[in-house]
Length: 235
Image (cartoon, rainbow, N blue to C red; front, top):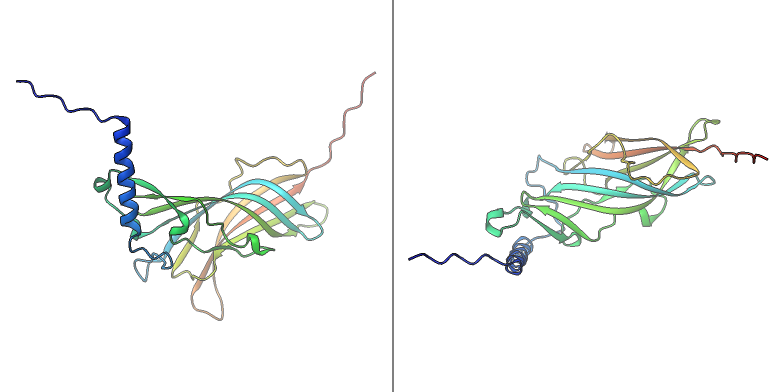
């Protein structure tokens, strides 16, 4: 006698299983999770935070105060060992969780000229992989100071210097994922041209303290565009 073939799960059934698994996973991950504690598993191994910044649009370059207002996207990636799981136990290899429920790096814009753009916005969701890697992308409108380059060049060097506010290099290691700020999505400005957009990592030790302090600086060099004259009309 032929055995009946098992019924193929419908799309609704699969969605139900996925929803139940994701709900159970979220509950298991956060049941005893303390977002105020840095996920530093070993005392001699700092949490590595990878940064990538993408320039989107220049909002304003105030020449009277030498300050730049720019819209960016910031990507932060780190590993939280408390957020690991076995995909076979839940049937999912990644999950999205509200970033406000997680520990997040206290990345600060050291060169900020106002309080509103000093700290990274914490909103929306982060993507967590089963290996504990957390991937968070957020829009960030910054106001930062600029330095006028030698007279006659009409260039300004505007630097965004990012680093932890409270953690030294023994607890948090900040690294740039590329040697440049990404300008592939940059909206062309009729007044200013991007000459260069470099990223550099710095490690500093101060006289007051033996610990290293780490930052990643994005140096955006802008040049004033030359006005273009309209072609004369032909009669």
